Image (tube, rainbow, N blue to C red; front, side):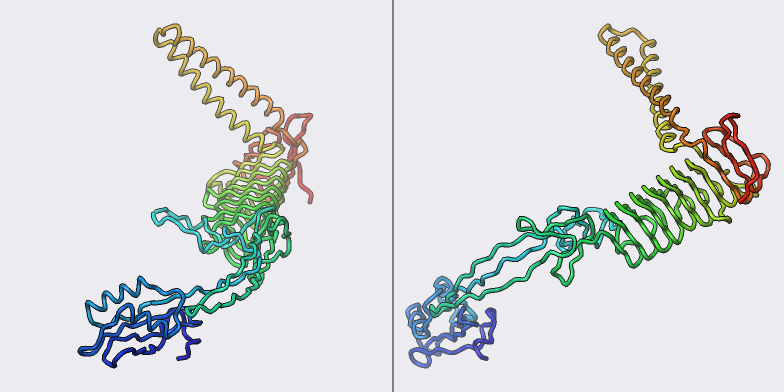
Length: 477
């Protein structure tokens, strides 16, 4: 084997170096690539031949011109074992040179926190794989890569004392791509979005996230600062939270969805009674079943709203054959649908509330609960004071606590009164139904209720502020 073809860990073919008589102990040596290492087998003598000793080894090293990096401790240890065992001691590293250290040019190294393969998890920890994501999400201004300074090279020395010149390595590293910039020896994200690495070297940030398949355990929960488009279905149990709009081309099996922008679900929305979908814009879909849906703008549903609670600061718009069954609808500016309620009368009744701001109503309900809690605490303290006599100091503390609770209750009561003045937000809200409204349905506009006790067909319901009641009139498309 040619010496230049041997690796540093391969001692190669032994060259037997014989000194003294043929029966004397000797060395079989080999050199690694670039003569950076010398390995030796310590061979015992035949019959009455002379054993190897340190002087003979020194003489041999001089003959083979090994003058640098001699491992004397290893040689002495091998000789000790050799003299005791009188057997072959193999593959002893007897000399080692210094390899040259290459010069590495400066380059941009990617932020190591983006390397998902290096994350370690405690085996005892219960892992929720829905929290794992294959996407790298970055913030505007976040460092994507840092400039590694040039690493100077250093010449090496082989076992013969010859200089081994270092080589120069031009490392390519990362470079700045779309929506990134270089500043203070860093590549920085110019926007919020998904980090994409083109050709393993160009860092770019996409403002949109496009998922070509379904959302499940292979994607984890989707949490993204921009727009999200999902071409496959969304499985139950997974959250989607976006800072932009959301488009889902198939069915959404709803657990939790929240967006700052619009939501479009072409395949329809299905929940299990606990699912919640919230939009800072409008919601458009084919149907909504067994969930809660809230939007700051309108909610547009093609076919049906079934066993759901719907909240919108816009209006609810449905197709001519759209049906609302067993649901509560809060639509500030009104509603238009094909029909309302089940003709059989079975199941949950449908209630329609228009003209009111549902966010104000929710705030009122929250404060009413707080008022009740405070009332219970006040009653408990009053009963405590009536139950027995207290020391003056203790009585003063109880009276002070009672006074604070009463003051807080007055504040909550005033807040409720103020909210009640703001709950009616659109007296012009209108409910239009192209088909039937079945008995048992409740219609409210600006807190004025109409209980449907007989079937209505093709009607338009509005609030008459002068009469203070709801007016039902024929609906003309």
